[in-house]
Image 1 (spheres, helix red, strand yellow):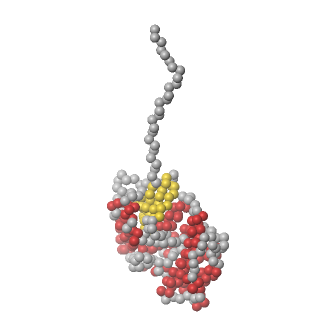
Image 2 (image 1 turned 180 degrees about the vertical axis):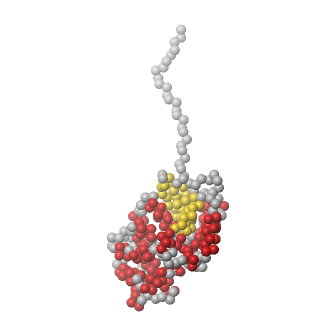
Image 3 (image 1 turned 90 degrees about the vertical axis):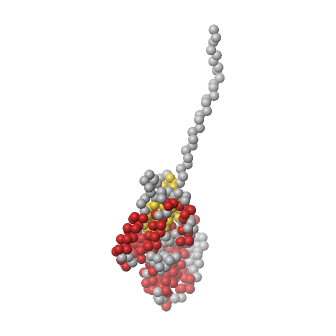
Length: 310
């Protein structure tokens, strides 16, 4: 009778089949578009703060230097605009103009030059400078000067470090393309500021072809009474934005891309509307036509295309 032979050696376990690794989720790409001075850079900074991405020490120092530049260069623009309006600073303040024009950018961690405190304060408070700034919409003047000069004492302290509010008010005319990444509900989001100048818009097509997750089109509400775009002194800012909006909505590359209309600078709009009336710049029929065209230019992505879950 043949017996069964049983080996005491353990058999090697069968190798487990390798499961396919899940593909890494691509970051959502938000394309930030808008005309010049619409506030795209401020939107980027706000997104950074909302999603708890603190500014680095280098960023804060860079903003501190930028704020000093805003104070000096911005005031110089106001005085230049005043001269174009036939307004001169008071005789007792005229010797301060050469000091303002000679103001240099400050170096890393260099305190604001204390000698400029009195120069800036006196020139800003000059009656004709205030008259000119009240007409800021006619000369494309910086809209952050009112905020900074209200805090001039604090800004000139040797220990001054910009607050988040200070950083949100800083202004620099952006050129070129910039990308910023942050996390939203556990997903990476890349926000691309594609610039707003006419010379940069020809580059937008490259980003349209990259199939962005969505487009955020930024419009400055406070631009309704401003005609002085750097590139076209006769074009109203809101009209410029409307033309650009309709052009974006009709772009075939974005047919399947959600587009969000973001109305920015509502705080400036609420303050300005008290003294600068829309009817002085747009008739009732023009407003009706404007609202109609803006609301019908974009029909949303085709059925079956879902809005991004961000």
